[in-house]
Image 1 (spheres, rainbow, N blue to C red):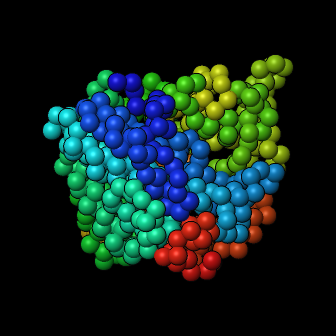
Image 2: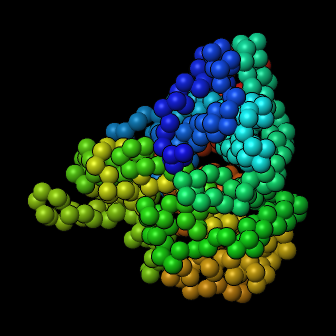
Length: 489
């Protein structure tokens, strides 16, 4: 079996896309009669789930909207109009990013539903089939988790869609969506192995499912100090910590090194392969026109000054995260970049996911870190502080592990509120540009204030409380009479 971060060509033939609404593409009749019989068929179907995930994150379907809708990233005014509209909170039902989040998620959910429906009938070993189903449940939960955080209640589809008669599905309530996510992840925890070796490294594991479940519980706790989900989040995070399978790299930059893909700090990552099945992070984030990446940089967005200056002196993450200068490969001159200069060619760039070994445009091979061990430590610290109404020594230990790796002094003697602020700040610094910030601002009730505060480059975002959710895409509203629109759109 090839490594799962390679996009398999047969994936396009497994599922025939023919529906305009939920993108729940049914199988073609030939596939129905000839596929899902052998152990190899079962494995191929599961691999296709990862191919879809790779495409979603490569094309910034989840990452870019999350960054520019928060306070960490600023798109250039000469860039994609839909990206700028999200930054300004002029978000309409026609926004292409909004539509892609929805349609890509449901395409992936359909693939998971197919695996869950058909793999049990294949000739694969029963233990292997159990693991395959665990992967499908994990990935279905992941996609529903993205959907519910962006849109609120969404249609819950748990069976394979095979007919146009099945395409009009009403939105479920938020709790119903979360109940499915929880059930899927519990099934995954009970079905997945603790780890893989060799070419199977990168598949979903028991730790990945437990870690994602901790994040789900943290999100459900919201900003309610009395929520029972704080304790659930802490318990699941501790389960990952106590497994002894994960740890922090000594150097922050090692987290993102090509040779460390699938390493000890990774619970789950979206894997790529340099110049074979790569991503656009190097080309997309490099200063516009800069000749330091193949095809020159696109310069789609820049870090905000507020984020850049939040790193204190001596924080080792700052030089690993940002590109502040480069040597021109032709002239040999050093080009100094700026956090204030509006010129896209002179802007400091986000750089920790850049793969400078790539020789093709869009061929970067660094993984996208969906869930890291440092995230689990910070989830644990926040959840324990909130559930116990104050930080325990264990909570301090978790938070300070992350800080000390960054070269910062350990914290102590904080109140509940002070500790909570410290954790949220640490999350912003540690996990920036990894697709967490907007979700963190929403779940803690801080989105509106954060966006209004980050007003550089004449942002002047017209943000309202209802913007904690994105609109249901107009294409889906037109095709499905059962859908209702989110308030404010």
